[in-house]
Length: 247
Image (cartoon, rainbow, N blue to C red; front, side, top):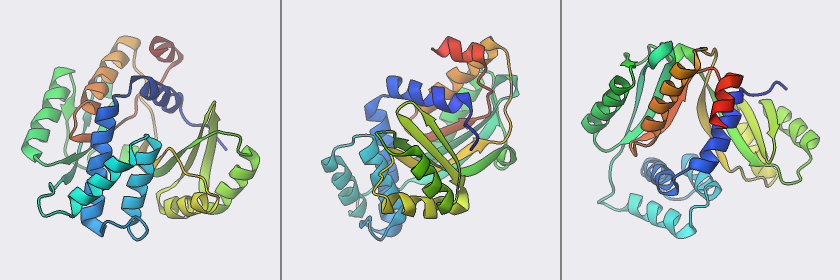
């Protein structure tokens, strides 16, 4: 199976070092709330909630926090979150796709536009960049002694298209339509991913010089710091020079 981009590996390591736990928890709690309101408070019968709870556990969120979020979502005074996306270009023509969960769309629109303007980017219309990204299932699993060969065979059988090992992390990738079958196979194998979900993977990358790349990453980091923003995807090519700069 072919490997993932260098960006995926470095971004994940960087996130593990730089992660602000409070912000991570805020984003996961939003997902738990919207999943609960959408399909009820039982993870056994609500696949989206089961996935959100799984990700909460992978982020070491206390059980009490998870239960409080579900209880809050079931109450009459629970916030209502809108799922929305933004698409645009950062400096250097790097495509950026932003996924949000917000209780105030006007605030989010203004904040996203401000970040793009600050770092020399420009927002486009929804749908203008979706062709540059494929939605795929991504599973991050701890490499804690599992037989890679056996796991790879099981994952291929379940529909996975890629398995990559990087130190203590195994990343499994599948087509969007195979996400459910791969997730069920992991449950059957009693393997609980640290993180799982549908992600937008660029089908082509954009190479820019080092200074432009650093400006793009400042835009991405600023967007990710916003509590209304769940995920930021881009097609910046991770060159050796940029990888070395990020350490």
